[in-house]
Amino acid sequence: MNFKQTVAIGLVAMQVGFFGMKSADAKSPSATQEPSSYIIAQVTDASSPVYGAWKLSYSISGIIYESVLVMDGYKGAMRTQYFNAEAGKTDVVDQTMQLKSSASGLILLGSNPVYAGTKRRHRTYSPDNFLFQVQPSGTAVVWTCDDARRCSPVDLEKIRL
Image (tube, rainbow, N blue to C red; front, side, top):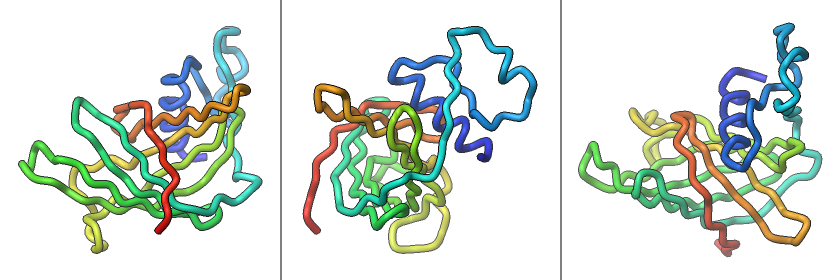
């Protein structure tokens, strides 16, 4: 597991009530000497593929992000539109999504954010990472934390393309 994945998963988990999350394959000796309040999370390849399309809506610093996620097994693509305050206009970003699994739920890791319809890397957009959980009551809970550590709850809606 690379540093980005460890940090992204840790940030998402902290937002839903877990603190001090560490990768289970951490090589440092301190990984086994942490206080009992720490949780060790294993992130593995997902055991079941996911197919379909969803609309995701979330807010970072009052700016609404609207995304369409299309999953085709263990990989997917997501297009997001939002108001870029630095540029003073709406930006549209495409990124690649990878499905993983953890004890906390399913995780989607974003990578390679590019200007929509191009291969040109977006200069300021941080990849998105999502944690999907189904609670024992059947309630779905979704959180996002991007690589810049900005986090938000997510509204999720199944759509047809």
